[in-house]
Length: 561
Image 1: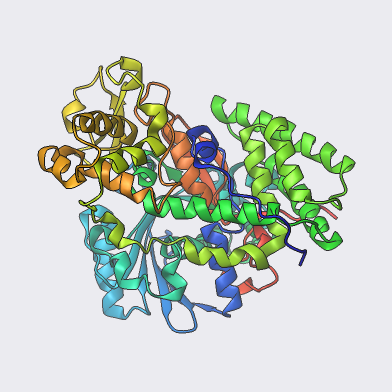
Image 2 (image 1 turned 60 degrees about the vertical axis):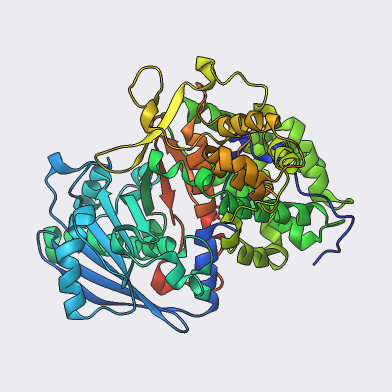
């Protein structure tokens, strides 16, 4: 390990918490998928498939069990024969190619029968506290058909088609944390393997990927009989699980300021630790260079037809070329090599390139940054309690600290409040509409913290700075949520987005990208400014092949020999 040098401070929230930068984040060592695979390998988890009862039409059920040091978790999967006209990624769909639940333990026959009556119905069914998540997935029809037909004919599928799509199925939702009767997060949060954020959901997707591989092979075997080829493990290796994510996920980072702060603060602390190293060993520099080249290969496979992402990809490819030329001039042996590299990037690269570089410099230093993952959960339930004794002047100061940029905006101007967030009646999912074109204003959700902070700040002007905030809230209870958030900011400096979430130019994609990058997603492919497709676990080992040697850097493709 290299020596520590002068401590470089974390970047400021003013720099980090802009939506354009949050919408440029990439996966890193601290991503939730990689946390999970490292843990499972380190703890020598074992995996089994006790049930695979799928008929010749592709209908049936299967169970995939992951056994950890203390507990087992089982993915219960149901495969369906879905008519093409019913296949939809939209949340209003009521049928899917496959549906899943992650069971807490090993299910009995009665459990499987109960789940078969409910899981395929999803929202229309009901699961119990024995289940930790509920999910569903649809086939990528063209690639699925191609793979089945190729294998049935005794051939391997075309690699170009594999790389172009990247997955055989994509999930359209993975629900956890108490939804539809599943166990509440609080019931399992003290388990070491579940404590980090979204580990239940990441485990569900990890096991789903194994099921999808096995199901496509089964369907090929049915069609081709004895002459069917077995899917080449090298090809299977690059098949991930797709995901379609829409507006339902966007409000999460607004509604969970303490949790989102922890994610950002941990990443920023990791970056600061690496920038503070006064030197890099040749081995550390070599790891970085290799990961950079592998990342560049991954970006070359990234495809999108959306104008926003096409432009970002063009910039990123230019950035990668600039980084490559910079590394040719710099052998990383001087003082503070990572700090100098990051400082250079802030004027030479786009935000997309800067944030990729910030992720990559962490890779040689697992021993220095991986421990920070234990700080990413939200353990501050008491933060929701409002301190009524705080003085009005102090509360106004906290609002200025997070929202000074918003206090002078004219919030009556249409361009500053053009959008409104609401919840759809049909599916109880978040939506965003045009305030002045749709009758939605009276249903608006509190997802405009900057506007609300500005209103609370103005309302406090008529109060003495030395009055307790409780007195203000007694007359203005509508500002309770703003005061609560302002007080949270003392613990959560990265909890507030420094942009207008209801302005005419807001792009919900940035919110989606920020959250999905922490999951560990790659190859973001927007389909509009409100939903995006991604790929998860592409390149990861399958459960039976997971080792400490392949449990981490799988996210970067191996370079050709």
